[in-house]
Length: 125
Image 1: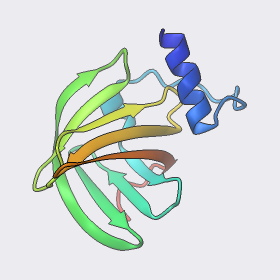
Image 2: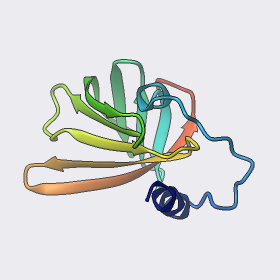
Image 3: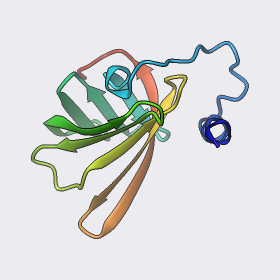
């Protein structure tokens, strides 16, 4: 089952051909810090140890402290809650090669799913 999940993540993120990329087996809380962007390149997250800066189309959405509510190392899953954010808990599943993560959360009655790709280790715009 876990192998199938890894293969599915590899397919979603297009990493199946990057066999040279090393697996990152650190806990999700250690992998999350850095600069991430969505596939369109408009939405950017800059994660620090305890806060995240959100940018959309080069406009600052906000800088939010966050708390880790839950973490499952074997599933590479972390749930965070952004303080002062209208969204529900954010479920973040980081891939094992630190190339991207899938995020899911709700705002009001809408469910939002984002695929975010790792850019670099910058923690601020």
